[in-house]
Image (cartoon, rainbow, N blue to C red; front, side, top):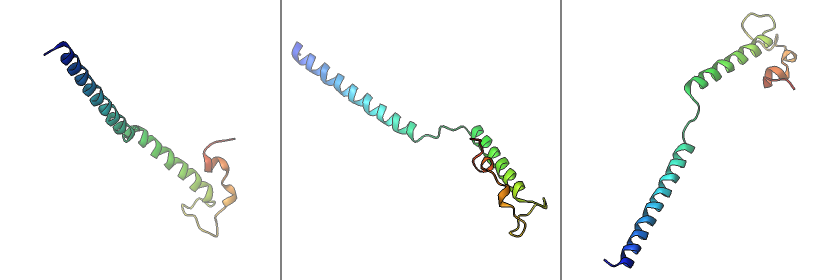
Length: 89
């Protein structure tokens, strides 16, 4: 094999390796983009927070504290933006 042929072959092999590595990087990026990045513990904490917020709003609406909300007894004006949005402005 001549030097020219060897260099051409080396260039071709290198080009194939680069192309393969680029394809692998694209696949890796796609996989990471579709991967869930939230841990189970975080989801449990979020669920607990949501439940606490729900109970807080429920208690605000349950004016007679009997554990039920009825149309006749509901006090909508007791809900504040803090209850709804969970923060102050």
